[in-house]
Image (tube, rainbow, N blue to C red; front, side, top):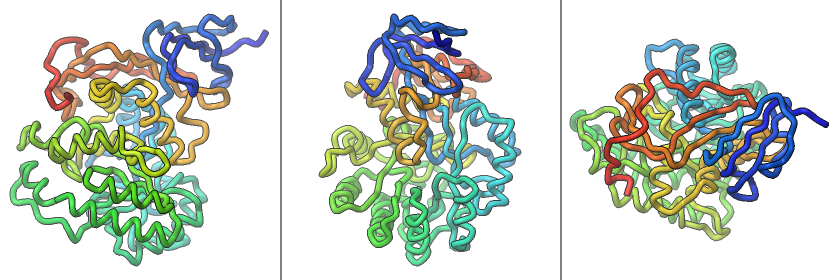
Length: 432
């Protein structure tokens, strides 16, 4: 009888057939079988999670890895360790902000070298598109392994990813369409942005109104309709644009969108105005916008019955935005469970759909033949986020805790440098 490397049993395994008891057998880094919970599966190592859920590892699209002033190798080591602690097993790395920005094969090689021996999880890369990018450079990046490209219509990508005008946007989309990979777009339009009057979060909000996202989305859709390129809006924040997105998809424009937990959980009215840990681009918007954004994720079906916003990523931007990669899964689960959603939806938003969007066929599901990227997640545990690395969730009581992560069947440490307590602390009304 065949002997497996590892068998993990759980009463709440999330598989393509739903949530229920199952035993997952791993061999050679891949899922070899998904069997009945009590199945006899000879193995070298076995783990019984009991009521702790077993989820497919998260696929986090467009996450930055480097804090300003930090060595690139240090950024990969620290960020991927935090990702593993948060249940993320694949990072699709943003081209910028980073030094060097991934806009050439030379820069891509620097990232490959820096990540080669410093990563706790899988990494894939997005190539950066700027007004200086040539067709040959984009083709070389694709030939050297990027899984997609990213661009910005304003300052969303930082100084190393200069905004594209309509000419370069259309040209880039045509080239990306020929490669059949997605273009991830920060869609705030630079022409609609103002200069913040002061350093506070409210000043940033006033300077970056929803119309900047609406105008940017209109530009993206026009270029995608002409070129046939697959555009992915990241992040999608201004919920008033959901109808535009749905209408575009109804006429066949290949566009998708992701948001992040901080936009779903932290309305502008409920956060300290002077605290820079809540500062991001686009900014946190109103509580009304937050409710409408949830509606686009939960109920906003387009003409094909698909959600308008169908994936959730960390939006991790250490040093230049919100840095909370470790808390992506618990924060999202805290809010989703209060809305009556379950582990199936959680896995679809964070694993299945992102893997499909990026063409990562071996990721995103627990089924035979896929990589054994797995997460043990206790959906009933509570924890209070400590002040070390907690970012905008510091002091908040979250529901759900990652207690184990496997990358290709190999356990990865999920212990952060400062582990928070399990109980106590208020769950703020922003999650209601």
